[in-house]
Image 1 (tube, rainbow, N blue to C red):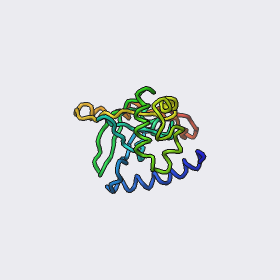
Image 2: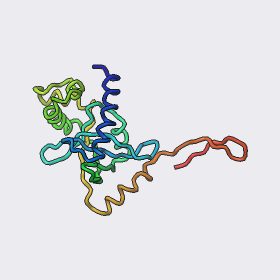
Image 3: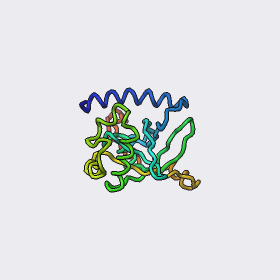
Image 4: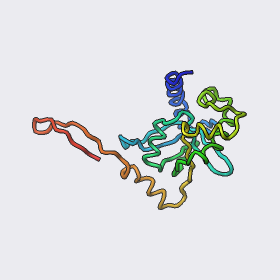
Length: 182
């Protein structure tokens, strides 16, 4: 399967899944991830799979450097929505040695999902060295659930701190000018 067909199919499927999840339809480990857009500063949503391993919660991007990955790298405070409950989280990208066993667990757990196995060169029976070799292709993030009210308040305002300046052209006094706003 080539990358463009996977991307277009996944994009259409993801939009439908997000709508169903918004209405509270239970869909197993699927959650809505709300991030702050790295350039727009607007809330962006996507469907992600919450993976657990040894008591920790993880987000895995089987398709590499996607938009949600770039957004959480810019602003690591986000929200997970499940059955109409919105929980603030903080994500931390982990190194390849930490990511490898999480990737192995992810692939074993979701091997029957049609678009997951083709995203990996390793297969279910591969040992950890194969997952370590391709860990750079699949970003993995550890989730910290925010329960401290100060951390939750800070996560609400993180968008303002991480928003990239927006350049736009405006007409003012009959002249076109370029302005930058945050």
